[in-house]
Amino acid sequence: MSTLQRVWDSNFAYQFRRDPVAICSALVLLAFVLAALLAPWIAPQNPYDPLQLDLMNSKEPPAFGGQGNPDFPLGTDDQGRDLLSAILYGTGISLLIGIFAVMLQAVIGVSIGLVAGYMGGRVDSFFMRLADIQLSLSTLMVAIIALAVFQAAFGPQRYEDLAIFMLIVVIGIAEWPQYARTVRASVLAEREKEYVDAARVIGLSRARIMFRHILPNALTPILVISTVQVANAIVSEAALSFLGLGMPVTTPSLGSLIRSGFEFIFSGQWWITTFPSVVLIVLILAFNLLGDWLRDALNPKLYKET
Amino acid sequence: MALLEVRDLEVEFAMRGARLKALRGVSFDLDAGDRLGIVGESGAGKSMAAYAILNLISEPGRISAGSIAFDGRVLNTLPAEEMRKVRGDRIAMIFQDPMMTLNPVLTVGAQMVECLKTHRTISDGEARALSVQKLREVAIPSPDARFDSYPHELSGGLRQRVVIAIALLLDPAVIIADEPTTALDVTIQAEIMGLMLDLCETRGVSLILITHDIAVVSETTQRMLVMYAGRVVEQGETRGIIARPSHPYTRGLLQALPQRNKPGAELNQIPGSMPTLAELPPGCAFHPRCAYADDTCSGGVPALRTLGKRLVACHHAERLK
Image (cartoon, rainbow over all chains, first blue to last red):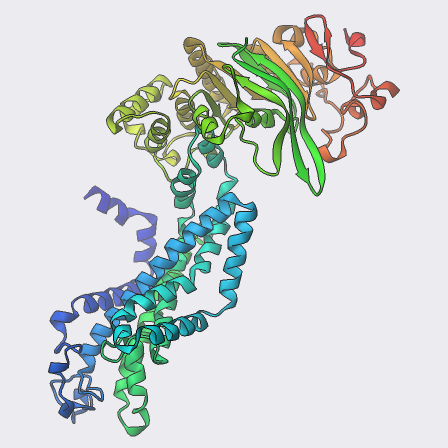
């Protein structure tokens, strides 16, 4: 109770309560996460189970238009899959890939950034040049090449099973320099502070100084870029799926849903592409707005009197 | 043999191809239970000497000559892992600003327990009990509660007490205090200094007190070094040096003390400021600021020579006497 009370009373929580945009985006995100987690119970059908799909139901328009089937509130896609269910499950997959890819980026990037910043010298030059090389290749390009190679190597069937894992690894590895650079910059500033000298004087090991003393002090920028990076990772996943290199149509993510409906957009079945797109946009917007707010809230120089 | 023997210590920095010597031939002994003062202006190399003793000079600097023997072992050639065991355990250090030396995101207790666990095999409960006991010894009120405090919840004086408690945690043989009271309120400076001296005395801990405050050194130490531009210019018993300085620089420092001036009169100061390492004047580094300087001073670097019971590096030391 006392911890809860402390969190509630903190300056951070206070600023959050005073910012309607932050509250809205947090609520939207919470709703998406809950919907994705509860998808197996709240979705009208299991979009991954081919036995529940009926081709006779394909391309049903949304129910609210008056001409659709009330069983399919947002209509169906070309395989008779209920769009609402597919979006609920797909949001879950997109979030899963986004969050785990960012965790992978963070683990790689933070470790490399810490080591490079603290050790300096050749170690620093080596890792930072590596980061420069990685950044000079665009994320999508790296991902397209890697995923195309994986698809060819594993064959389509096996690739479908491994797709989530592959997307996490590829997006995770492609974006680590963002973290490495951010962390390195903070470490360079923290390293000169006297508490680091004090820790060295006590006789602590390098690893301990880096991870226990410097890292917690460099956490703020990591938190801030994490929200933006999750949004970026979800967009990357959607883009890759849209290009046919991401999630297969049998277990669609938001990107694959957009792609599957794209062919029908001019033949009248606009809803297949539109609804997943709207969900994707709202999701990304919520992440970015929350990230913006977090950046301002954690920046003591931008203290707002409101 | 003394507990700590520093011989001809030189520290050099590689800067843009040039090698700048931050310390040039510093030698001193420290016996168990002794107190040694190191005084000088900012940039004289006082702190550099402390870091060198702990072998913590970081790139691009390095110890280029000399030796540091502690308890029969030569520290500057010790493998990194062995040296790490000496730091904090046998030789502890107290820094100037307690705002900066405590990690802001860890509790006081966490920092103390971490230090204990690095050097000893000890259970969490024992570590806590020992830490609280040390906090009590440095006269921190309600040490049990303060153990779980974050540094920002404590006042400057309390924080410096915590730093002292951490330094004493493993019962070191030597404590190096680098301007331990400079960042504190004048009202608590004397309190903290008294506490530190008391604790060192009762435990027989040797103290190296680094400061620019020659008054503090005169009250607290038996022996002192006066440093200027990386060199020792005068070295010997504190009382003798304070009473009758043999080097013009020491004399200047003493005359600059407000206590030595008439009330209302303008303070005596040493004209000019310390030269940077890159543009040391030829000969004696102090001669451009020295009232006694003549051609011999710019001609040759004065060697540290014995004069009575002390060592002094000045061509004209006799004239001052």
